[in-house]
Image (tube, rainbow, N blue to C red; front, side, top):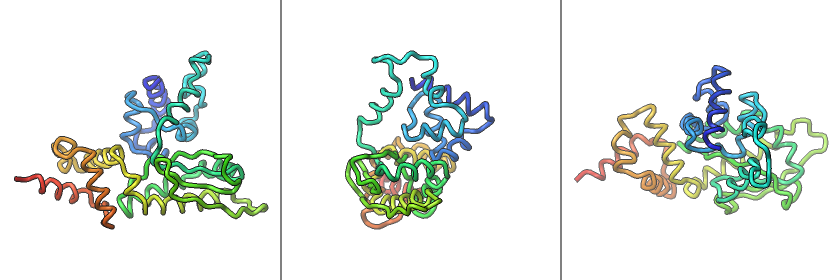
Length: 253
C-alpha cells in the first residue's frame, strides 16, 4: 500500500511539473516527508488526504487505489487506513462539534494552517506536527478541544452567529488558540520524530553542522530530550545550530 500510494503521489506531482519542495509547502509538511512517502517509507496522515487530492487534482479513490481494487471485508483500504491511524495517540488533534464542521470544511481550503505553522517555526523554532482534524459528535455542537497524546490541552466553545457569512473566521480563531497552546505546551508535544525532522531540515541547509554528529553521536531521542529540557526552562530552541554545537562541545573529552 505504501509503495503504490507513494508512486501515485509522485506520478501526479510530476505530471503537474511540481517539485517536492513546492508540493510540501502547499501541503504544510516538510520536503523530507514527501520524499519518504514517494519512496514507500511512510504514509501521509489521514487528515492530509483531502489536501493532497486538492493539490494534485485527483480523487481520493484514485489516490488510494480503490478504483482498481475490489473492496471486500478483508480488503477495505479506507477502513484499513482509518484503523491504522487510530492505533496510537497522536501529537496534536483538534476535535470539534457538529456545528463547527462547515467552518472547518471551509477553513481547510485556505492556507491558514500552513501560515500558523510557518509563524511558529520562524518566531520560536517550533515545528508543529501534522494536525489531525476530526469531528466529535460527543462534544457540544459549538465546542472544540485540542489534544496531545490523548491529553486535553484546551477546551472551549465558539459563539456562532447565525448570519455570519465568513465561516472561516471561526476556523482561524480555533487555529490561533491551537497554535498558542502548542507553543506553550511544546515540551509535551515534542517527540523523537519531530527532532529528527528538525535535524534533517538543518542538514539540508547547513550539512556541516549535522553530518557525523546527529544521529551518530547525538541520537534523535537525546536531541529531543535536550530541546524539551530547554523549553521547560523557558529557553528558545530556534538557534538549533548553536544548540548542536554546544551539545557537541559537551561530548569532547
